[in-house]
Amino acid sequence: MKRPKALKKCEMSRHGIKKSHFKEQIRRSPSPSSSEEPSNEHSTGVASEEELIPREASMYDNLLMTLRSCSKSVDDVIKKRQRQEEGKSDAEDDDEEDGSESFSVSEKEDSEEGILQQNDMVDMGERNEDAETEDDPDASETDQEHDVEVDDLFSVEGSVCMSSFSSHLGCKLSEEEVENLSKKKWKYKWEEPADGMSNCKWIGTGDCFLKDVDKSSGYGLEQRLYEHWLDVSKTSGRNDFYSSKERLFFSLCNGYRDILHCNKKPFYLKGPEEDSSIMEAYIMHSLNHLFRTRDLVTKNDSKLAKDLCSAYNENLGGDSFRDHGFTRPKVLILLPLKHIALRVVQRLIKLTPLARKANVEHIDRFLKEFGTQEDEDDEDKDELSHHTLGNLKAQKSSKPSDFQALFSGKRDDEDQFMVGIKFKRRRIKLYSDFYSSDIIVASPVRLVGKISEAQKYKEKDVDYLSSIEVLIIDHADVIAMQNWSHVNTVVEQLNHIPSRRHGTDITRIRPWYLDRCARFYRQTIILGYYSNPDINGLFNHHCTNYQGKVKLVCEYKGVLPKVLLQVRQIYERFDLDSIADADDARFEYFVKKVCLEQR
Image (cartoon, rainbow, N blue to C red; front, side, top):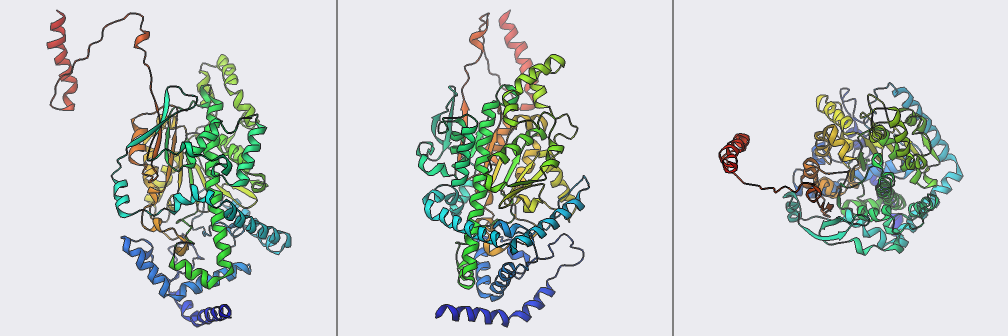
């Protein structure tokens, strides 16, 4: 009998503050000048937006105390949940169907191709489709089955989920640990030989985790994702999956440590198999991170829907339901050229389980803008014969085969692209709004342009970069040929406190986001054919993952023993007062010392 009384009491408090809540909403309504603010933004009982940006660690505790003492926030979330259950939500987007993070889109997707009206028509079609889904009994039954599957996933796998994903995001850093991470001093303690590379070895900080991989747990993958990966491997003719390169590199990624792999043979230099294996591994890691995030949010949403009052009181008092970031995008993939992005997105679609990709929206537009006549052929066949085709082209062109393969896009804007990818329950949407996307695939050049626009115009922002948890920089050597400073600019912009709320439910944000510690939880994976001081500098100074670092170190024998005429080489040191005088001092030393000795 206590439960009905609690619900009745909660209902009475909801009606008791209804009028005052309505007046408060009018008082907080945005001015006409702030057109970019979300119109359907709900109040969460916070006195001002400044409380969303804690300057000190103690302000987070003050915020929780404010939320506990204010029953208005409970009233808001209850009414919001009731409107969603009745199909009367203000933001009728298919994010509700996804069971994923309920972020209202505050910014329209910047489009220089003049397709805003087309996107609006697509969104209206989605809303109509969602309305039909709500009335469809089969769809609702499927949703219930999905909730059961999510509960089974977390109850059966249990410790498997806690091993990497949950343990990484659920860790609480102390002030001392944050201070030590800010010093950016790393000590590599272990090393392991790299399979297939006799002159290379993996070295890492902390404890070695490569030997503790459990095959029976599916390597930490979501079960359906793991089974689909096995099917794809068998279809591709890879019989020994457990010792394959993609499986081994996935184990590295699943450790949630920063990774530097700068000995990856690219597809344009007779290395399509190795390049595809590494790409497949980080795509699977990204999908696994996204699906586990969504399953966790769905599980918490179902708990909140069953018992609103007690669940939200528990949410205000603890961290059990804190599973959100400031915005929805969680994975950012930086690539140098469009046709490389085409390979990545096509592989991502192929590796997505069939139940989650019944339809791929805007795929025709994507192939038209990113693909060529050759790229639209079968991907696997194209990868295996790519170098052969390049040799045939080289005979007809003055350009070498690697140039032909790398710059096959033949576009003036080959390095100007940015695409949002959104995973719905049964389909994938390309060209989704950045604030409602799960993955953003972009070039550093394009992102720097977006950042410059946000700095120039107050109505624009790049807050969709505030909650990136996995950053992947592939073909770093090619990006270094373009302009590596763009990568530094993008990385410095990640994991900042957003300038606006964007409809975020503050009661669901993870504490370390509010504590300005998100950069210590971000995993950065840098891949390339070779390394240079710029790449090493980014890895050493901008990658501060608390889990630690792993990088590939290669030892080269050198070419001096291969010199036909064995010439004695002598190196001498000379002193100088300033580095600016190095050239003159070197010449003076040569004239006065070396030449005189030879005479």
